[in-house]
Image 1 (cartoon, helix red, strand yellow):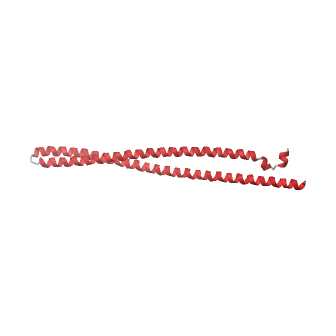
Image 2 (cartoon, rainbow, N blue to C red):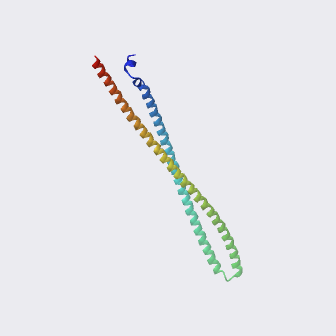
Image 3 (spheres, rainbow, N blue to C red):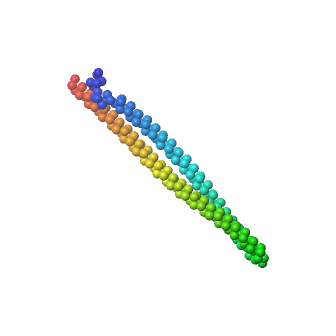
Length: 180
């Protein structure tokens, strides 16, 4: 009863306010932990995408090498055709074979071109995903900064409030002593 008479309603509510502030701090820490987990997941996904991109680059290099080999084989076939020009029957057979091989190579080249186009699309998608991940990470960073700023404001407010309360207590003591 004496506390209720001497202390203001705000001072009596102080323990509840401190509990509320502590609960808000716990929620903030939990949210920060969740944000850290999301950031770790984003980093893992980025590493996976980087690894996939390296694999695609290796596959493209293999396709380029195969195309070079095909070009070399075609050049060798042309040379063989020129050398066998003396025998028309042989030349006709070799030409027919070359035509078939060229058709196969053309088909393979078309298939490789299609695969390359698909790889380009996948790379574009990966680039877009990486950009989205970067944006998400920046948003997370901004949220963390806002949370830190809010926490600092709450701490400053709490300090100011504690100083104000001490001033009120001091003032009440001075008034009581003066009245005595």
